[in-house]
Amino acid sequence: MVEAPSPELARQMEPVRQAAEAAVAAVPGVTSVSVVLTAHGPAAPKGPAPAFKVGGHPKPQKAPLNPSGVARILAIASGKGGVGKSTVSSNLAVALARAGRRTGLLDADIYGPSQPRMMGVSKRPASPDGKTILPLTAHGVKMMSIGLMVDPAKAVVWRGPMLMGALQQMLGQVAWGALDILLVDLPPGTGDVQLTLCTKSELTGAIVVSTPQDVALLDARKALDMFATLKTPVLGLIENMSTFVCPDCGSTHHIFGHGGVAAEADKIRTPLLAALPIDLDTRLAGDSGTPIAARGGPVAEAYDRLAARLVEGGMAWVPGCYGTSWGIMRCDMGIRGMIQDFKHWTAGITFSSLRSSPRKDQLPVIGIA
Ligand SMILES: Nc1ncnc2c1ncn2[C@@H]1O[C@H](COP(=O)(O)OP(=O)(O)O)[C@@H](O)[C@H]1O
Ligand SMILES: [Mg+2]
Image (cartoon, rainbow, N blue to C red; front, side, top):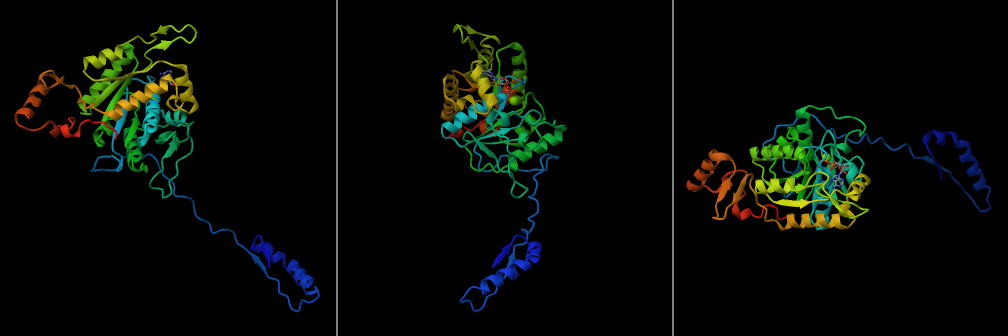
């Protein structure tokens, strides 16, 4: 049997077939011979893989956007850009994964996605059926970003409804699988993405990142106010770029001021979860695609402590509400809010009837078991 590369070549190879037949027939002892030419045609065209189209207006939805299998969604927010939300999100995600939690990271900064660079992934996620996308995995974290779906050199020029549609897709059409926690790296400010996430999904809570300087805190307060309005619990604040230790002389500098976030946390009676230094290795690690939390050292340990703190839980904070020494909940919502809450108490309705208020038996809110 002579195998030709294609049916067309097989036709041209008829003389070869005849020569082969003659050559074998001439071998002493051969009584009969039959040479056949075969050819494999080109593989049947499979058709292009169904393309996953990202963007478009949101679809009407009844149930919350929470992907099934994802136990908790935690938003990382700030008022201002450039204060370190994405850096904190990627490092915290890596630290949680290192602590053995099944962790996902959703980059919801649609206009300025940072996570592909910070987590070191650039491959376009596969969509075998054109309806769901498979998240990528980096440093033990499942991740998804709009930056993986669009040309990185092109600006995303979308209005609000398109942003909402994209967020809906990234929550609902990504095969997140079973996760203990999904961190959402939010864009700066108090816009459409925040509003959609807080109102269309059930968030465990939000963490607000700020630098200590007044101009950042001004905006952080707006983010805090937005979460209070939307009844999303703020689990705590993080002061990023808190201190700078001079690598030459070892002296400590407070480039962006000091203690501003701690004072704010104290004022609104919300935990200060971490104060992270401004650190060259943190920046270099983020730019190189391997977050500092994956590399070890003092900053990685700070992220491990932050992750451990979240895992241990016990931070069931309601926006503006806090336990007082006489053991009842007070709210910083002004007199009206207090009276409303008082009515809830006196009417015997538990706080669980308020969306923002976790039931006692659900405490701690973010024990990420
Ligand atoms: N603690 C830190 N030390 C040094 N550089 C940092 C730190 N936190 C963030 N950065 C750097 O600051 C820039 C902005 O941080 P990023 O996380 O992108 O902020 P955001 O997401 O709030 O816009 C990035 O270049 C990042 O590497
Ligand atoms: Mg960012």
